Image (cartoon, rainbow, N blue to C red; front, side, top):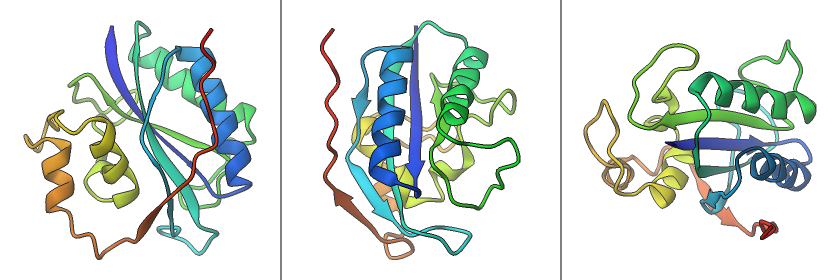
Length: 166
């Protein structure tokens, strides 16, 4: 079983797609542990503000299967094959960590934006405070404490989603 962390983001019909993404992740992977939901400005392009959060889960799927599942969920929620990196998103699911692996394929693990973007690091520090970054050798709480918080503004917003207890 692997400990996995996924970032979720949306800036198109945000409330709808956050719920759709969480429902799909729960269906695919089971029990989820959620960070707070944050609102942040678009980074890298002019666009509507994003909702972002991090989801922790445990799975017996391979990293390739997890990456494919995330892509399938994105496509089922309006993502297109030609989507540009810095553009509006209905649903963006990025694999941040897969245990303590360091990989470049099938995905960059740990994901580079963990240490660069507050909208990834703050929610990751909430759900994985004591977990150590496999390259930086600091835990996510320490990385968040050291982060220049004036560089990106975030605010917590209410999350209206409850995982069914089936």
